[in-house]
Structures are given as C-alpha cells and as structure tokens.
Length: 238
Image (cartoon, rainbow, N blue to C red; front, side, top):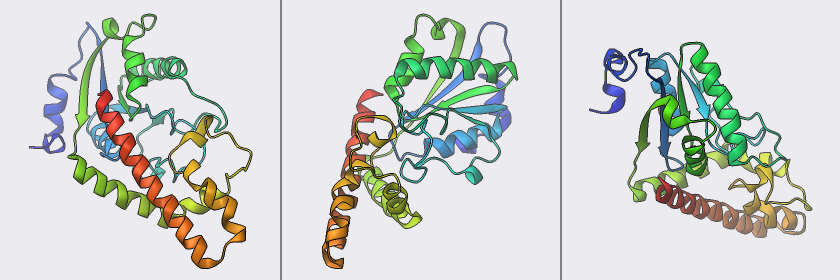
C-alpha cells in the first residue's frame, strides 16, 4: 500500500493527533525529479497543512520553467511558502533558510496547520534541524519521509522532464534572462539549465540553422547530465 492509498483518517489518527508536548512537522526529502512537490500537495490535501519550500533555487523569483517550480494550478489551493520570493540576483544561504523557515513554521502552526517542508536542498534542512538557536529537535515532533526512486528510472524521467521543459518554453525563458557579463555563481543563475545555455546564446547570432541545432542539443544533453549528477549528490546527503 502506498502512502497516498492510506485513508486520511488513518494519517490523522496518530502522528497528527493534537498533543501538548510538541508541535508536529513533516519533512519530505528526496532527489530532484522524485515527485516531492506533488506528493507534498497530495499530503496537504489530506491534512490541515501548508507547504514550505526547501529548494534553495526555487526560493528565487523568476525562471519558473527552468527551476521546475510547481505551477499554481497544481497546488490545489494549498498555501506555499518561500517559493519564488527572493530576488533572482541575491544569494540565499542556509542561515537565510533557517530564519525564513522558522518564521513560516510559526505562522503555519499559529493557524493550527501542519508545516510540510519539501525540497531537495538537504543541507538546508539539516541546518534547520540542527540549529541551536531555533531548537528544532526540542520543539517539534518530526516525521521524515524520503521518496526513493531507482536511479535508472530517475535518469529516464529526468531526461523526459528536460525535454518537456524545452517544449514548455525554457529556452526563450532563459534567453530573456541571459547576460553575457553575468556571474553564474550568484542567485538563480546557479540553477541547472542556465549556465548550460551560455555558449549557445553567445554563438547563436553567428551560426546557421544546422550549427545552432547542434549546439542547442549539446546544451540540452548537458542539462540532463548535470541534473542526473545533482540527483546522485542529493541522495548521498540524505
């Protein structure tokens, strides 16, 4: 039986039954492409819950396709916190995450909702859980859920997802953000799917159709490789 096959009453009966000791928090982890965002929405529709994004790239505003932010229509009316709220030109550190996430959790709990923290930035989640000032471990009873997908299956899905993102307009989206003098080590430009297009955008005006197509495919394949590498690194940190 999968998690989503469990009747909502069972989900609420034990872990989510109100107690005086500690507030309840769910942390949903897993590599990129494993379906964390959609699973978090499915869980939130069965609980009195709101979602906190813990992806350090998706916290930035802009490039919704390239950063694979969950679309508004897929959120099912569930409030999402820390999603597309930071300037794309600003770095977002683990300390920033702990500060914003702690305030979001307090706000959600004040409405008698369960915070569901979902995203792939495992080092940021670790920083939150281990932060001595916030005292996460002593304040909250936490349910950790990890979405596990076999790597061959995940790599195939990642490849198909990148193709879909291209069909949705990722190239034009990133092109509108392109700056020949940009620093790819700052802000949203660190996102996979941005620096990989740099060589293509620089050369595009000077190439014929066949050359452009070849260079574009090289960029797309690099995005797929780098996304698979990211998934492997994320799994190592869980």
